[in-house]
Every structure is written in C-alpha cells, then in structure tokens.
View 1 (cartoon, rainbow, N blue to C red):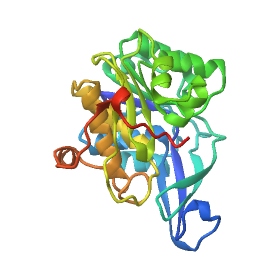
View 2 (view 1 turned 120 degrees about the vertical axis):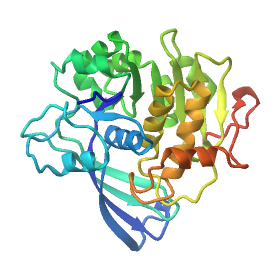
View 3 (view 1 turned 120 degrees about the horizontal axis):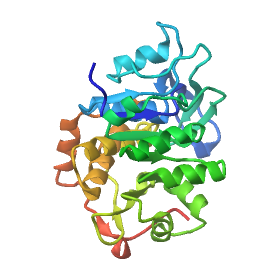
View 4 (view 1 turned 60 degrees about the vertical axis):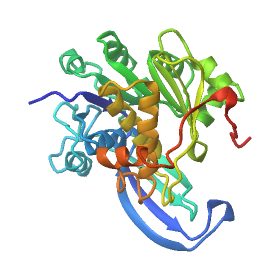
Length: 315
C-alpha cells in the first residue's frame, strides 16, 4: 500500500447546519434549509487535498467499528485511513452551525472527544510523508509533532485557539504557520497585520500566513522579501464553512508541488474562494483544474507589498 504524502490529525466533525434568510447580526431568521455534513479542520483539509488530486492520509483517532460513518466518509472523500489508530471510544466533534444569508456562520461545538493521535504513532509512516497538517488539538500529541519535524516533514499548523504553554510549543514546531487573523491578534497582542507577521516570524519558519476572510490574506515567506497582502477573489458566497480548512489543504498540495510562498498562498486562496460557493465544508471543494482556471481569470487579484496595500482589518 502506498504511503500518503500529506498526513494530518486533529478535528474531525459531524456538522448539523441550518441556513437562515437573515444575516446573523439580525438576531433571528427563518430556516431555509438544513443539512448534516462531515467536517473538521484537518479532515476537510485532507479531503481538499484528495479533491485536488493529491495523496492524503488521516492519522488521528478513529472509531474501531468497520461501518463507522466518519471512516466511510473519509474513504469516500479519497482520504487514506489505513494508518489511523483505532479506539472504540473515539468519536467525532459534533457541531451545530447557523449560516446567515451573507454566508457568515456561527459554530457551536462539543469537542469532548479523542483528538490528536497515538503517542506511539510509527516513525515508519511519518518518514514516508512530506507534510503534516495539524490543528489546535495537536497539543495532545506534541511529541508526535516534534518527531515529525525532526524527520524532516513540513509542519503546517492551523491554530485557532490557545491553551497556554502547550500551544506556544505547538506554534514553535510549525514551520508553515497559517492562522486566522483574529487569533493572530490575540496571540501576539499586535494590531496590524504587518506587526503580527513580524511577531510570529522566526528563523525556523518557512512561511507565516494570516487569513482574513473577505479581506484577503497577509503573508511572509522565506523565499520573498517584504510582507504581502493578497486581496480576495470576488465570488458569490453561499457558505463560508470550511473555507480555512480548504485553504490549508490546498496550501499543502501546492507545497508538495514545489510552489514558492506566493504561489502556495495564491493557489490556496483561489481554492478557498471556490469552496465558499457551495453549502457545507465539502460540497464545493474544487478540483485542480477549477483552481487553475480561477487563477487565470482576468479579475484574479495580485499580491501587493503590505506597506503599499490598503489594509482594512475591520477594527
């Protein structure tokens, strides 16, 4: 059996989603549609990799039942599960998501679940991969992340919340650090994207990327000089659920193909833009051809140096 090139462990979820006819700021609205879908930061990122044509493997805890719904979904999404540790008590995060008419959403979740991966996860599997995608729950498996880094894997961190020193250590292990701008502001205590990028940078980093939804992406890479802002693609937003997860998966896929920081960010941003044109986190995950087509369109945005960019962070 071939070993996946891109591995990941972390949140895997079952989402109950309700779509309403008003923006969330209205306080209430009429239900237009409801659905149940599979999600989770890392699981959706890996599904995005597979949809783009990459080789992805989920290596976090899975239930031991052969007919486990989460397991079946991963397999149907093209994600390898053979190397994932199993436990009868493993279950997904359960989320209830309300999506407003503007595509914004509120997520209420229950994460009292086995997350992370087995402490004795084998180096043999890790060493055959190139990229490891992790999220905030990887604080439960810090030693595995450290071993993966020592084995030469690129550690791609999707960190959204902090548990103190354990999260600080996790962030230090990530050489590709991709954070929501809101969390970066909290983590650094800085206000502007430029200050956050500088605060999060270290000689061991390959890239620091800050995603800011409809305001675009801010980044700094080892290959480039300066700080950069990539404005957003203009698409019809149906549901922003999973957009960041798709970004991480597409970034990992571009990294595997040897793209530089600017190329990785551009590819990931285009993939994430396409992903929000459908419902749920998985319905509109794009193919490689779709991303390439969007990047080649005449209105595709171009990155500008941050010092020359108009920066609106909504504050």
